[in-house]
Structure formats: C-alpha cells, structure tokens
Amino acid sequence: MDMDFAAMGLPTGFGKAQKSKPSIAARFEQTKRSAPTPAKAEPSPAPPASKEVEEGPKVVGKRTRDEAEQEDEQDGPMPALTKENGDAVQDEDVEDVDDEEDLEPEDDLPLTHEILLKDHTKAISALALDPSGARVVSGSHDYDAKLWDFGGMDLSLRPFRSWEPAGSYPVRELAYSPYGDAFLCISGTTQAKLFDKDGEQKAEFIKGDMYIRDMRNTAGHVGELTGCSWSPWQENIFITSSADSTIRIWNAENRRKQKTVIVVKSKERGARTKVTWCGYNRDGSMIAGACADGTIHLWASKSNFVRPNLSAEEAHEKGTDTDGCAFAVDGWGFVSRGGDGTVKLWDTRKFKRPVATAPAPTMYPGTNVTFSPDGKYVVTGTSEGTKQEMEAGLGGGKLLLLKRENLELEREVPLGGRGILRVVWHPKINQILCGHADGTIRVLYSPTHSINGAKLCVPRGTKSRTIEDYASSLHVPILLPEEPGMGRDVSERPNKRRRDKERMETGGKTRRPMAPVHGPGKGGRVGASATQHIVQHLFRDNTRDEDPREALLKYADVADKDPIWTAAWRQNQPKPVFQYVDTTEEKEEDE
Image (cartoon, rainbow, N blue to C red):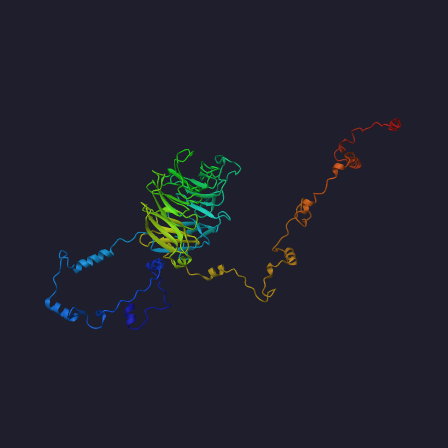
C-alpha cells in the first residue's frame, strides 16, 4: 500500500518522521573492541612495473588473452581433473574448502566486546560479583564502595549506590556469600563489616585487645585486615586474615567473638609475619594463607591448626605482598601471584617446589590471579610499558591467559590505559571484569558466548535526559544585581545584628539554646575561653589554715535563731547548763 502511494507521488504518512531505533545487533557492534594499532613499519620501495601490468590485452606467452579464450571455446570445455592427477582440483572442491574455512570454530573466549564502568577516582582494589552474576560490588583506594546492577543500568552505566564503608580507609577486599544475600567488606581497619545485597550494614565484628600478647586469647584482630573468604559449603562461616599474624574463622551470626584462631608462625625473629591473603579451596576442605615473608601455608579445615599441613618456604620474594592466590577446580592445582612479578603453579600433592613459573610484571601491589571457569587457563593482569605506549593503547594494562599445564602464554590482550589490579571471570555469565589503576572497570563479554550481565544493559541505550535531570544536577545559586550586596551573596557573611533579629522573629531560622541550670554556663553565658572554668578552680584553698572551732561558731547565732534540725526538741528538751570555771586562779598560780 505504501508503495502505491509513493508511486503516485503522495506521502506515505503524516506527522513528524520518527527516528528509527538501532537494532540490538547494532548496539552490540558499538561496544565491539577495536584492535590496538600496531607500530608503523617503514615503507618498502615499490617494485618495478612489469610488462604484464601495462594497458591493453594481457599477453600469455605469444598469444593474447582474447585469442586464448577463442581457442578454448572451439576446443570445448576442459575435462575435469581428479585429485589423483595432482595437477588441479575441481571448482566444487575449491568451494567446499572455502566453506570449511568459513565454518572454523569461533573463539569462545569473551574478549570481543567491552563496556566501561567509570565512577571511581582511584585504583580499583576490590571487585566481586554475586553468584548469579547480576550485581557487581567494587571498592577502591578513594574509600568508596559502589554497587552496580546489570539489570537496572542503561548505557549511562552508573552505580545505584555509593558509600564509604570505613570512613577514610581504603577498601581491601569484597566477597559475596555463597547464597548472594550478603557480602563482606575488608578495609584497613581491624573490624570486618557485613552488608546485605543492597549495601545496608548488618554487622560489625569485634576487634581484639592490642595489649594481649597471645593472639589466641583475643576476641578479634588487633592489626589491619588484608583479606577474607567464605566457606563454600558451611553456611555463615568465613575467614579473615590480618597483619597480626593470624587467620580467624568467624560465624556471621556471632559478631562478638571468632570461632577459631589460626596463629601463623614465622621462622624470623619475633615469630610473627603479616598474612597477606587467605582462602578456601573449592570443596572447603583446605585453608590457605600467604605471608609477607614469602611463605605459603595450607591447613586442613578439620585439623587443630597447631601447625600447617603443607608449607612452601620462599615461595615468593621476601618482603613483597603475595596478594593473589587461587585453587583449581581439580582440587590439587594451586596458583600464586607475588609482588616480585611472577606467577607460580603448585601441586598440593608435591608442595615443596613449583611446577611452573611465568613472568607477570606489575607496578601495583594487590594484583590478583584466578583460573578460568573450565580450568584451562590461568588469568592475571599486568602493568608495564612507557607513557607513550599507554597512551597509544599498546602498553599499560594487559590481560594474560596462561596455559594451565605449564603457564605458557596462550594469549595477551592489551587493554590500554593503566595497569590491571583485579580480574574476575564469572562462570555463570562467562564475562571477565578487570579493575584498572585509573578507577575504570572493564567488562569483557561476547554476544554469542556470554549470558546476561553486560548484555542486559547494552540494548537499552541511553535514557534521554529531561529538564528535571538538568535542574537537579545544577546547584549554582542565581544572584540578581538588585539584591543587597549588588550580586554578592550576603547570606553567608557573619552578621550578629541579623542573627539576633532572626532569633526575635517568630519561627526564625535560629533559636537560642536553653541556659544550663548549674555548672559551666550558668546564667546564660559561658566563659570567654574554654579554660576559664578550670582557671577559676586553680586558686589556693585556704580552709586548711582556718581554725575549725571558729568556723563552726560563726553559725552558732544563726542556728539558735532559726533552728532547722532541732526545732522539734525546743519545747520538751531541757536547756543545757554548762559548768562555769573560773580561770583567774589558774592564771595566778601559773604566774
């Protein structure tokens, strides 16, 4: 019908033409990663022009191309050659080969598309996803923790909650519970905090007594916290590590005291060392802890924790923080990432020496390492390169995928920007989250191999802003020149007369507080300085030099005229008669 109107020269519709919305595939195409531009190579000299490139009919031997085609038409079609001849292949076979090349298995790694979550101002130090992969909680050195919801975001990519969980302390670690109903927040303080899924604080666990030497007798940590981990099978059980050389096992329902204490002993002088990381294996049967002296210890979950079951001394360089470790799905694989710029693979069945070692340079402490969901790769981030390489996208943050067997480099994905500190590969949604040192969170996904997550917010596009949105974002006061002060805001200037007038008015902005009945400030006025009340009591007390008998006799006449306590005995009690003694004779004898 529209085609008929268009053929007659009539309009096919009325009103303002509506803008066509981009399709979902087009929106995914907007978030497709562009490969970094390689360095420009020097141009090679052009080859000399051959005779075959000249204009006119191309010469084949001594015949022209037109003559050769005419002879082929006269002779008839050339018989098809089989593969056994070794001379040529039929056209159908060539087409089949092209089809096979097109049907090669596509890479199932979620590395083709990306979105950026930008709201932090400093390095990302903690990153966690809930078990369903719907929400992300992030922590940074800017003291903030933020909650992101893939199902509620559009392409503006803003968090729905932001707060400071520990004041002016950076967030060290975040971990969701196995059921996703709460998450732990570890900061530079000595107390772990438990929040629900919406970011409301549920509990703050007790801190220990710093004056007790034996760490087994304290109710909580006495040093800054460094890490935490939930038990995968025991409900409400989690562990925390601290700089006080302990790993403590807690029950989320009891915030007044820990359940068990694991005291980590060092061979150095003092027998204490900072525990930089702690975690459970996949079945919860083993607890691991990495220390600042380069040692890694493993305890069985059902042991008495007197001494570790397995230990690897000098696993990493002494004095560096081993902030990243992970257990493999098979139960015996263990990987560690030290501050010395190496990644090491261990076998818990032979835990004395590493199976393989790979370099992974980093400039930031706290870089973690993890396994891919299928256990084929070891994934970590790096930070290296010059400033020019970082700006060009060739240096800076790189995502390394190492082979599980020998830590050989399988793939290196340059992500540009600055270094990568945190890497999380969620097994359910098959997406990789990378936390950068510039405060950016990069979500890598694939439209074909990923499920939900970033795929939920990309098709929504960006919500158009209304006038209310602009008005709420502007907090600049409008000042008119005819106002008092000729455009200057005088409301913030101190003016005692104006404040007194506002207090006298009914329903004024300010109100004078009630004067105290007694003590400092009695009478409605406090001393000119804070020390005046103390100075008034610094004068010498002269009551010690006064005769107590004379002090009591001063009130004799007052007590006789107006007795308060003895008025009831005035009528029925006799008056006291004291014996009169003449002291003149005693004085004469003394003389």
